[in-house]
Length: 497
Image 1 (cartoon, rainbow, N blue to C red):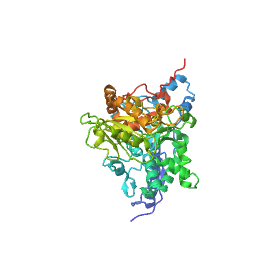
Image 2 (cartoon, helix red, strand yellow):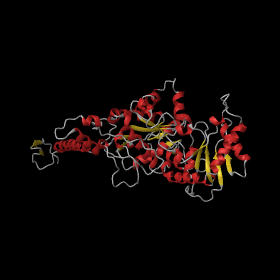
Image 3 (tube, rainbow, N blue to C red):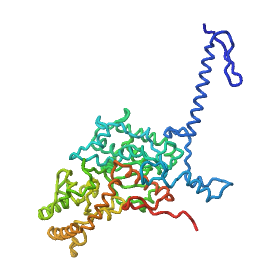
Image 4 (tube, one colour):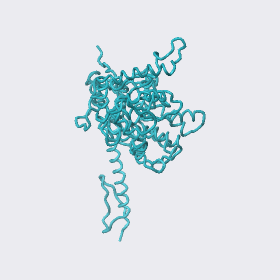
């Protein structure tokens, strides 16, 4: 029989009158107290380790170096304080247990995994992962704008990732905006994650990101990938239309962060434009390239073709048409495959590959060539500019413009007729074919740098995050890397005479 008794609190313990029975109210009160104590202990522990910064309920101890250096400390000089802070919060080398060699990123970063990692999302009821890992175009190509997906995967496994927000110096937002822009806005398909679809996902992302104390304090230290060709097109189409959810995210929230963008020649690592954007930075992406399945791109055997250009041949792509016509006239002396068709196994059988502009100056073709061990031949100077200035393409490629000053009529300023263009172009191309030493040097360099461009590795994500680090924390810049063609930002001398 339960006897209702009154619990008495003495010396921090619950005591009950002894009536030979269990007091029900006492049990209830004890359980309530235990719940309160457990809650307080849990939150104190959470505050001292890591926490969900999206809730915005816990202060984020993330002061920039300038504020930290401004604190009074009678026990150490300002120089000693600076050294202490740099050592604690901006390490200049990866931890000794680093499992992947030669990574560049050396400051800890935080990933908004729980909030924005659409790793299990679906597009038209098919898993997003399948659209990036299946070889769906000509039997070999991945989603060429899938860098947002591969960055997401790499961010979750990079050794400099921290789950403790107090340790983070940079932040990665893994929202798959390339997938959203293309499949939802461009193709009008459904993209769904955890019962949220399309604009609901964007609204949720914006709301949670805006709640983040880290985002409120340091939006420019957040990096997101939005590098699909459809992204600027969608923005232009919606420019004069009122789309509240779209406008709030893409025209407000997204303008505060740093972005990996679609090809844009003005965005370079140390450009004046980067300074003018009020400390948030833009980095032009490179496409997701694909190797030919089952064939080692480093092999030199069976390279019986001199050159290949596998591409769409639209009427407006005049340069592509010209090059294919000129090559056809010189067959079989020059062995080539030019025009529409399958990339593989052609790209494993050729020494050179033409990189020719189509709808834009960039193309997945360049990355496909590199992944297959082919030496690219650029045909327009603007193709270099849109790739950013951190790759020395002279080490990896040749330059053979279809149109330049040598093919322009000095009197009229107009291009020469097609026959004159042909003679000039083919003469210079045959000089490239005869440059055996130069070809072999570039071929070896291409093979050496395949991992740097291969999104199946950690290196593309690591490269972009390091470039981001180099802008935000220039004092942590490195002097060298394992990649000879990677141009590192210049080291900043932080010591004053």
